Amino acid sequence: MSDVSHWSIFINAALINNFVLAYFLGICPFFGVSSKVETAIRMGGAVCFVMLVASVCAFSINKILIWIDAPYLRLISYILVIASTVQLVEMILRKLSPGTFRALGIFLPLITTNCAILGLALFQTNKGYGFSQCVVYALGAGVGFTIALVLMAGVREKLELAEVPDLAKGTAVALIVAGILSMGFMGFAGLGA
Amino acid sequence: MSTPTTHTDEFIKGLWRDNPVFIQVLGMCPALAVSNTAMNALTMGLATSFVLLMSGLSVSALARFIPREARIVCYICIIASFVTTVDYAIMAISLELHKSLGAFISLIVVNCLILGRSEAFASKNSMGRAAADALGMGVGFTAALLSIGMVREILGAGTLFNVELFPEGYQTWTVMVLPSGGFFAMAVWLLVVNAIKQRQETAARLKEEAS
Image (tube, rainbow over all chains, first blue to last red; front, side):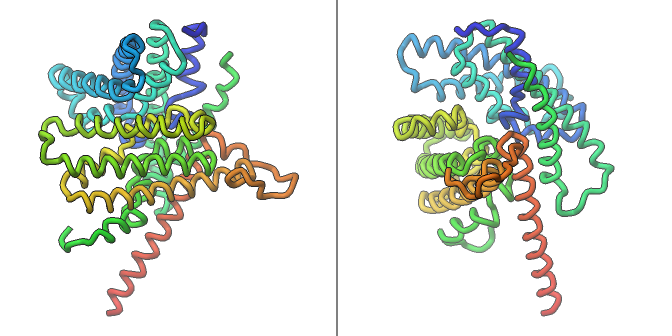
């Protein structure tokens, strides 16, 4: 168990090493769902929740795998458990809030194949965090993901009104915006210990 | 597809017309994250191609035995096994390389490209076709990664595959090796690809009007 303080883990995951803008994790939903701020917030919420659950799952799986001495099963078991958790969230959402379910549409199942979720599970294992540190790390990563998504959505809403050359329309201009956002987030680098 | 296609067609389409990174914009996460040097990009591309090929073959061979409802889970299991193999293989070959790629080798599992090809192509086609398609996609993916990685390494560090390219005193563009450089390099390549595509379309239209 590493002895980094919880606060610095949170800031590190949310801002300094933002999952989207510094690690490029979860780029697909980042470009896919970031055309409206409202949808972006909902998506962020869903990702936060899945991240929390996935983090707790990954922590327990890792403990079990170390106990039975089979670390090579890590990847397969992580992804299977995370996939089933996402299915669970999907079923709960469909029941509780059909509106949200329809708004997120195809992207909810895609959280399963979202590198941000699996990346979180792998990073926390590599860093050797304890249980409470894992939870804080997941929260930070989720918040960071939501921040990036909402910022991007805000910019893209304005971008609809701007005149973009035909060539750059769509992904290219979104990439440039993301690059500039990422440069902005580099300014947080001094915050960490 | 209306006309019957040969294995070569399946292979060629991954190189340009359906290039996974530049045209379909799939698998962006590794394309941006590990393309800070040409060497990393090449390793990542080869590793992904291997997984793509092996999982394409397995999915195509097992497609008849996999129940429809549970197919995604089965695909993920197959892909994860091959990724674990690649992960350990790279660790055995070069520990240094493994360190610089970090968790991104394991993250090949969630590359939308692999699952996408398994679901959309390999599960519906014969093994030969699936292999041709996977190889084409793999080469296309590697080429795309390499082109991004080369631009970033040349501008950001002044080297290519660790060979110095410029005389002393070259001012490196540090931003290109940082995360934002990945976004910029990819955006510029997309612009180039879009421009070429547009020119081809205009040329084709003019030809049609002339005839």
